[in-house]
Figure 1: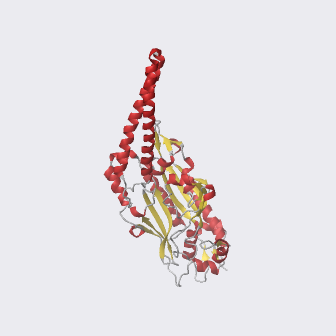
Figure 2: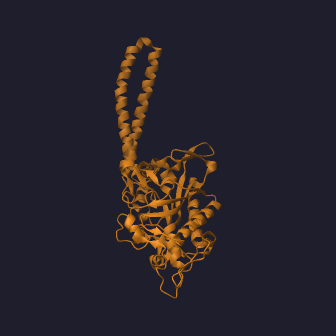
Length: 418
C-alpha cells in the first residue's frame, strides 16, 4: 500500500511513476476522497467533543438537564450520519489505494514487458561440446530419471516423477543451499503451503495472480505459488524490535501454479510445471538498509550459481514487467545448452514497505517510534530448473551427467550413468 501522505505530497510524481508500470492511477479521486475524510474527521471529533462536554454539564447542572438532553438528542443523529459517511469515504479511499501497485524505484528502466528487460551482467563460460547437446528430457528419459508419461496418467499434464539419482541430486541441492544460507545467518523454515485469501490480498498477489493460483473453495484457501506467500505474512500485525532486524529466512516448500494462459508454451520436459520445489529467501529489514539488502540477496543468488559453475546472466526488470508489490527486481537466467538460450532460474525483489503496510508489519525504533519494515524476497534455488541446468551443462557425449564438485559431498557420487 502506498502511503497516502506521499500521494498528498507528490501527486504528479506518484502518478508518473505508476504510469511506468502501465497504471493510470485515479490520483485526483484519491485526493478528493482524502480531503473529504479529513473534513469529516474534524466534524466528527467536534461533535463528539460537544457531546462529551454536554454530558458532563448534565452532571454539573441538574437543573438544566432537560435542555442539555435535548441538545444531545440533536447531536446524536447528526454524529451517526457523519460517522457512517466517514466509514463509506474511508472504505472507498482504501479501496482505491489498494488497487495501486508499488511504485517503481527510480533506477528501474522504462518498458512494457519482458522484451524490454535489460541484461546487465554475464558470468561463467558457456560450455563447448564436441557433440550436439541434448535437452534435459532426452537425457532424463534415457537414464530413467524423469517420467512424464506415467505422471500424466496420475495427475495430468505438466507433472512428473523425479527418479533415482535426480532425487538424491535434489536433496543435495537443498542441503547445499540451506547450509550456505545458514552460514550467512538465515533461519531455515518449512512453511505452510495453504494460505488464506485475505493474506494474499494483503501481500498484493491477489487479484493479480487470480488465474495462476490453485483454489480450494470449500475452505477459502489457496495453494501457495511460492513460499514467500506464507513466510512474509508470518509477522502480520506484529511489532518487531529494531535489535532483531534484519530477520532473514531460508524456506523450503513445494509450490503450485496453474500456468493459465501458457498453453503450448514450454510444455516439453519439466521447465514449466504445475508443482515444483523451491528454496526462497525472505528478509525483513530497516528502510535505510533495504537497497543494500537487495544487492546482498542478489549476491547470494550469484554465489550459488557460481559455486554450481552454471553460466548465467543478471537481468534488470523493466517497470512494465514488475510484479504488483515489487519496487525493483532482478532475474538470474541460466544458460541451457539444450535450448541454446538463457532461461530464468531466480528472481530477487525489493517490495519496500508496500506489503508491510498492507499486513501491518512494523518495528519499534530506538526512540520508541513505530514504523513499517521493508520486505524483500529472492529465489535461493528453483530446484527443478537448477536440475535442468546441471543436466544440460554437465552432460557427456555418452549421455552420462557429471555432478558439480560442490555437490559431490552431498550426493556421494560423481556421475549419473546407466
